Image (cartoon, rainbow over all chains, first blue to last red; front, top):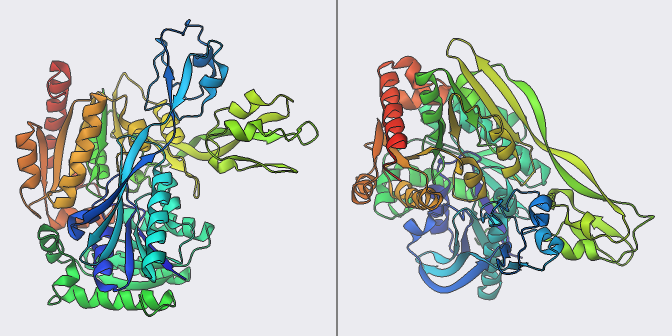
Length: 291
Length: 284
């Protein structure tokens, strides 16, 4: 049975991708899935060699045939998303692809057309297979693209005998986060000791609880505000959440990023040990020692 | 004047810029459109009063009238209705509220009910004359955009409205920045910051909104972001240095203009630059 771990944060910029890429380096039998599909960064560290590209089709988009349109406004009146302008032009950013306009148009002047909304890729990296994606600008359906990435990662794990999928999730609590975490075996929340970090941690912990997914927490840049770190630690303890790592701020995180390396590829630093022991704890939480 | 503060990458300092700009200007509206993780008020501490729920409709099916024809499930593009052999199931959280199912139902068996997916709160500070509107998406709800759209109905165009946008480039970002006069893109001088800035620039260019860049934590990484801005002729509006004092103030929820008043004039200067750009139409 392939295990899955999703790394999220609520707040952006807490260090999800930095930590996830280190896990990718530490795991020796894993598929990596970058599910932060509208601001994917993992490829900058893993430098993928892509061997498979898939088009992603999200929701359909309404097209109005000007020759058939009589300007009766039936579509305008029935569109709940204000996506059809008075000039009978469809605003592609507002259209949600529901097809109501196509249904109500008495002239059959409207057709719903498939629209390419992004791509997803399968690649080789120095740490194993990576499935990653690029969502088109302003597209809906980021959750659906996340699901496609996860589906492909599962197929690769099955076919190549990998025991684990490591999922780098997006920030927030909405559709793409829900799509990245539902059905996984463990969620790791990477937070930071700031008022926003703790607020956003609390919200994603509620999301994890809602979907009944086991959760662990890592406090990154923990020495930035030690009192706040302790507050997060106590808050987690009260809620029965395991704090599996406390990583101090270290400038080599950015140095490693500039070199396109993970932190643990330079074992000669204080963070590698901390991340390594966190990874061991997570693996034992996953009940899987061959990841 | 409507100014959005956005970024591709999360955690680059959008909220910092939005809150400090609002405090530096005074007499402004601040709308926290990062409804999945609204943080502005953590730095302002205003007393918030609930204004309204954000309601979205979903179908209710009258079993006595339903003939199980399945047309409702056929038109639903969001998998919110499943027509089974002996019943029809509705999944309210997947419903976008388009109304298609009730239109197609030949038996008049579908009516629409409303449910709340989030709320809008308002807070006011009289000393700075700042009006804050905050949207919050309920836990486990997937759709942020309806909350953002409803939040933006509170924009008062007789004053300056500062919009704190969510990160990324997907639909909630478009809902936040689409009708703005100007967009400030906040980034950090790292490879991740640059990669996501390029994506965010593509968004604002496609929407035709004039924009400039704020480089936060200036000094931590490399000069890739500055070179990119120079090559693309994108104005760099402000550089906020990487400064442990600023980071510690942030961690405690203190807007740094309050402790470092010299930054107040820098934010006001940035606002003047933005106004100039909007009135001259340069930078689109």
